[in-house]
Image (cartoon, rainbow, N blue to C red; front, side, top):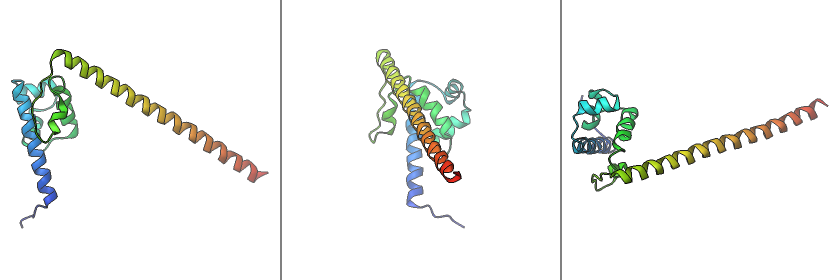
Length: 138
């Protein structure tokens, strides 16, 4: 029995294949083999191969590879319609790292603020519930 691929499935395969080709170009621009990349990112060479072929891989492997590549390339271009490798110089690397750190710190701060807000709202709601219970019992 032949399975019929949907348009959405075809688009996904096309996207993954294109991303894999782009990741391969990035690796080759660094002059690295899949084995070396696997060692540097601490994932298996098979995982690198599958990712570059667009046939598999996990978000974890992709994140590790992109994190490694971010030291050398502007990762945003990986997802651009017109893909081009943009290598970062030493100065721009430090600027990007600083910018990324600022973004991470801001995100963490927002998470903490939201948690505080959530706890305050929970405390207020709990106090309201306790007052209702007291009123009910009186």
